[in-house]
Length: 260
Image (cartoon, rainbow, N blue to C red; front, top):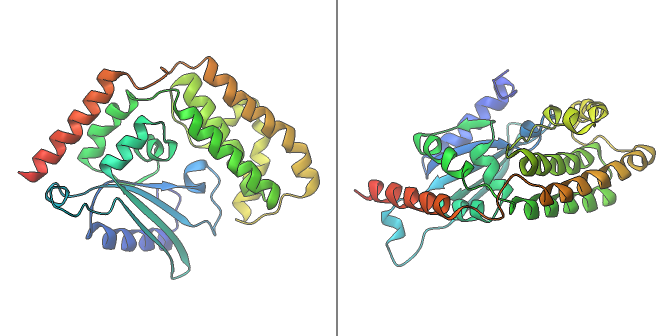
């Protein structure tokens, strides 16, 4: 079992896929997202590999701009791989707008590969955190709640809860935490560990009507908590101007160094 909780087979498949993708582009970071980052992976969970890459500076100067996003989804020897990589400037622009997907790739913990660029980037991104993250986490949680009503599974229920609590924690404490098992006690939801145990037993474990009925008001309360966190947040309304300028200056310096 790897440090990320992957079996030797899963780790070998991830390493193979990332070796192929790394030969095509320079990764700043590759992050293992999804259930592995959220604290409730099951043996049949896919490997949700979310990356940020740096396009070559020379490719950015030509008439045809390089692709900003690369996707790969396939099953390799029984392991489902879901890989997405976004170009560095695209990801940083999203971070300034409060995009939690990109923030988690930079500030999360479940890294498959990292780099010197990533080490330099983390404090710069942390200084750009703002209340804009509320829009991302609130919208994402609401979409997941609708998906839960259409197809009640323990996984979907946990996704609503995880998203709401990650957003609330970020707004109230300025700390990004994606692992639900590390969040539930702070928000008096310790009994969600029974849901985590059920999800770890299987990716598609159903949420029966009684379970869904019991948790529906608590999910609504978690979303209200996320909204209340916005009003009292420790974060500024928008990224501080000096922090945003420092982030852009780092990007320009990084590009120039690679062009030389």
